[in-house]
Image 1 (cartoon, one colour):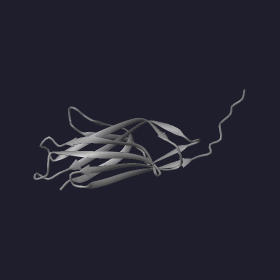
Image 2 (cartoon, rainbow, N blue to C red; image 1 turned 180 degrees about the horizontal axis):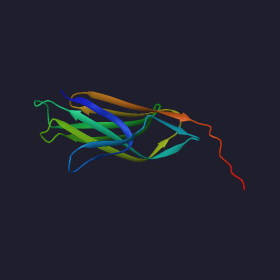
Image 3 (cartoon, rainbow, N blue to C red; image 1 turned 180 degrees about the vertical axis):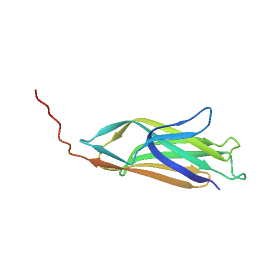
Image 4 (cartoon, helix red, strand yellow; image 1 turned 45 degrees about the vertical axis):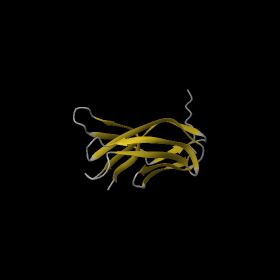
Length: 135
């Protein structure tokens, strides 16, 4: 049976070519903005899946990105295990528009298997006063 081990959003992530270790940098739990709309310059969604020997090698996933109920992006991704029991993906998105405070959600639906997972980030509106220095 296919299982999600990790589904998370961060500033960046990498898979080391020598050690094959997965590293996730600066996990995003919430985002504060002074005004809306704004764009997130770069965000990475990391997926770690496991399967059993009897499960298929190849799956197809649909990633959906939402700001509250507004769909920002929806796209398909291939998920290949290549005869291994674990698969890792780093999905990099750039220039992601956020139009309002609330939630920024990343959803992944995998077929076959009808498997779903979601990661949500709080989007906060902040009123930061500018710092003015005078000389």
